[in-house]
Image 1 (cartoon, one colour):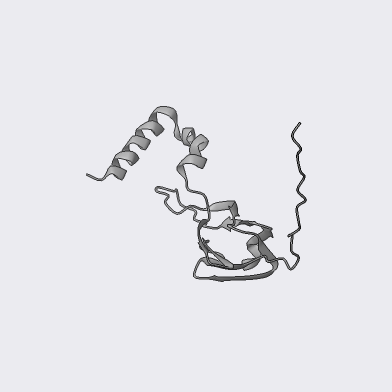
Image 2: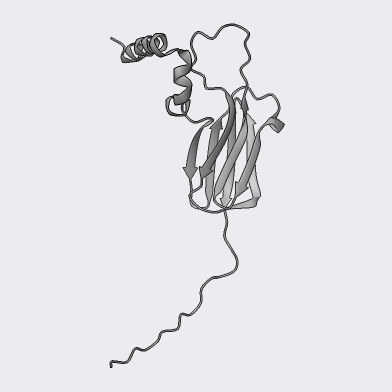
Amino acid sequence: MDPFQNMQDWKKNMDRFFGESFWNEFDHVLKPPIPQVNVYQYDNEVCCIFNIPGIEDVKNINVYVDYATLEVRGEIPIHQSGQLVQEEIVQGSFDRKIDLPFPVRSDKIDATYKNGLLIMNLYRLITKQSNKHRVPIKILKNK
């Protein structure tokens, strides 16, 4: 027996009892965050691959980088006029923030979109200034 079928049957019974709008309160729990992302860390680089299907114009995707945070905004468009019977492809507006494993350069980012995947390569921020400084040590005298 398929355990997911049991969940679908349970959800249908809950829909009948509470009404279909009952589940709207739980959308953030029941649906995964969109877009889905894989993050790969290398020595001096981070590669983020976002699953964003259906984008016809990349100008509809907004990407922001701030030190060690990556934010991707946009909309996954699926427009059909029929009544939705089953929904597994997450769609709609999104605003996803990813905490990166280290600060990255904002002036050197490679971003490409192909076959529904936004691939971003970000490079570690390495400052030329050293924060190294000598720390003075005080002598405490016994009283």
